[in-house]
Image (cartoon, rainbow, N blue to C red; front, top):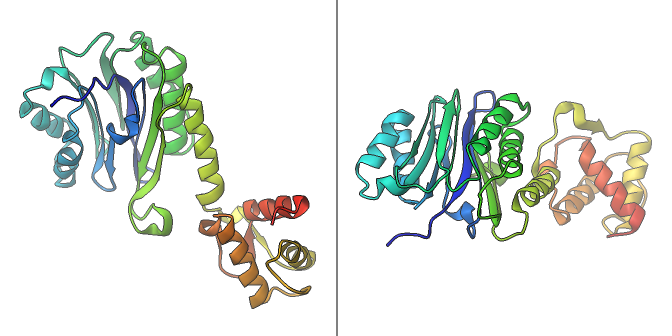
Length: 293
């Protein structure tokens, strides 16, 4: 049984510095993120689309994990598929080698490009300028892999994208121990399943993800001492997390701060010792000022 045509554009990439792999996708298709993006840390990432063969995701990751290069993996997947002429596929392997495939029966405009560490592809697009703008943006954008993927997706969307319109967008990023709590490799998995302008909405969701889950660097950590101790105690008392004033950062103050962070879904930003993440401090100040406890 064939799926409805998943006419879409996507970017698959690896970031050498962070050892991350990711996929970003947008489409006039309900919940494209449930079909197109696949990834596994230390293996690679895959986008399967057009008349999407979803088995390309898990089967391809198994081949990549064994050490098979992207091109060989793509060729093996496509060779066994009788519907290959209707498929589109992008792969980046563990070494950052990339491959893309567009079947001869994919609807115009359809095609893809690859480069060092990335594969970009799309079908039923307004024209080749969509893929070209995505390539230019990916190569010229600095920042994390997530930031580059989102910028690339936005460039494709604003240069025409899916010529049928807009409906969904998604991003998947994997790295070893990258998930909430470090239990799996899924560092980021955000989806906009049905929206009139899904790519900007996806970027908005990422800004929330940054607030809640992104770990601060050492330059963003503030020592809790002096007047800051009293400020924290007063704020936490006003919000109902602590009783009494404090002049030192003791266990009760630490416990109250941690409880506040848990209640606000900021627990991934907790740091041991008498220090506080600047983002947490700003959020505590905002809550205290508006009495939002």
